[in-house]
Image (cartoon, rainbow, N blue to C red; front, side, top):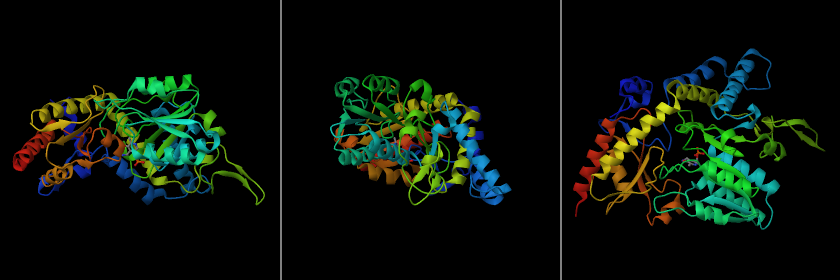
Length: 410
Ligand code: PMP
């Protein structure tokens, strides 16, 4: 059943964390949508930097500083190619998607939103693509509008079109939902927004490790990625922004590196991308992110997607055979996220019982409380799959869920 079974042990061997037992059982890691595991080459890049050439970047002229600066900027160029951006300076390093969205909401919002303007987000959003917009809308007396979500967990495109008007200034939505896995028709969403003159931000947290990302073809204005969801370290990520917008936007944070010249009377800001990179950045993690990109490209996104889709199909079939399991989010186009509830059993209890068998899943609202409310539930059990998972592990999950259902029967 595994599409690349011949290679899977070789792939698994690259992930030291997978080689362990949890609660006496071999670890089965199905919490990949929260953060996925790191291959050895990423971990080695962190060690090599701290052991070999730790130095602050851009400022020093000594050998270590130059080596660190070069490695840091190499990631910028790799990321540019990874998402097909036109210019390297359109890649801004941040701490991750949350910071990237806050940067745009704050900087773009402060400069371009006015009273009575409208911001549209979807009902499928993570809290990090809701709250920053609430904050700026409140400040600017702008209105936040929500695209409805259908019964199978898709964006309602008709509902979206009804919300669009010349008042719309920003549309923000995810490329794929972390709670349900739904892949959103972002190209169409962007096209429709541009017709009314709005800019579009895409939250790519759940897309970066699975879907081809081509910002030029998408024509999005902003695209956000977290390193830790694409085999890279935590604490790093990017904001892609079209140069024409980034140049017009005011700085998000002030400090070292983002300036050209400072006097007490006036400060002039640095060129892109440094205008948005105040202070010492997360040098080690950005450098190691390059190895995460190399890892993905060594397998190819196509193979990764094919493997993950086969796991998703297999898991959907296996779990659908268990009475009282109900899936939440059944769109045809999904990344490998399977969210479900079990009648009469709290998701938290399911999570705990699975953990006792060495199976790591996520339970709860997945930082999407409004979406849970849409489905009239408190939360789900979420199993999300990655390149190193196997059908054997899914058999173990299905077996464990069956036992839980039988054990908890009234
Ligand atoms: N958006 C989505 C869809 C996510 O899945 C996540 C992480 N769960 C975020 C945003 C926030 O990402 P981060 O915590 O890396 O900033």
